[in-house]
Length: 461
Image (cartoon, rainbow, N blue to C red; front, side, top):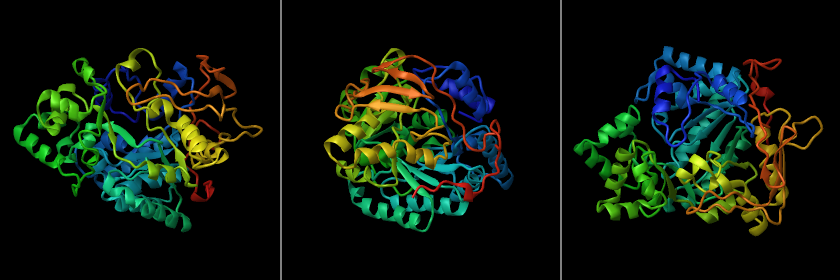
């Protein structure tokens, strides 16, 4: 959400889907200020995006920064950290983020580390080159001094399910050497993203509009179609190749004319349109004018059960927080939007006994709070903020499904945020109980600013 140039603000509004709002801010801190003034129920914390900083100075094309531009990018990271960012984040599987090389990421992560921040990252690859992708994260953490968090820890595609042991060993080895690596995951065997993860990065060079323009060219279309059919490309991460057309579920469209296709698989749409699944995917992007929201079914349930028990694993929904009413009903989110955390407690704790209730609660609260250096949060302790969830361990569970995702979880009775009820007796109060939770370098707090050293970090063993 920042820092934004005027052109980034324009494109952000232009590319909005069902949920529309004016982009009235330009800075990272300005966005947090806007939320607090508007009034929010949950607490909101955020990272500065390495991709956002890159677009701010380099645009959306496949280019590399000059030394002067890289210094300017570091300055934007520092500014966002002092405005309250918890650290630096990146999603290296997506364009234009994927164009960044490792030295660029180290340079930006160094600033986050100097400001007491973490580096959270979607690895560059989560299937065939999973080992190399994790090693890059380790290298960035070692070289920058920033703690690193691997998000969406997974092994995508059946041929990669057997890599879990090696992946765990790499993280354990790094941690044994005092490299600060943790991870988080969602508790489902499918991931949700867009059809951009089904197409090579070269066709997306320059942003959404140029991507669509290239797809309209017959020669480019033929090349993209061919590359999509390769489940193991050497230069990009083909999630469609791992899931297949039958395992690609359509979730969200911008174009009202395409919304009746919500909930269908890509294979079903291809059959209706009487064309190949690859052509159907290309036509969906062109007709919708967006990346199109989809779910890819590509992970192993057996691996999930082992992963939830890892002591350095916490949990993230990787989804926005909708409500089952109004504009949110115009598309299908992944069921993890409503069910991720309740599913952990209901399925993996109560039903499967993959981890204890006490361990699950710790890794939903105190553990991630310590990783993020959130002062006064994550524990039931005198003087701490009263962020409290009261739930029934015998009934808590998810109800959202892929066909009917807009169903709230059950078994949660009360939620207090900053000492006030956001949920009482199972019903939302509507109170603006939340606030912006800012990082350690925030200059609005006493002693703020980018003066932290690596020695100041809380190390979660």
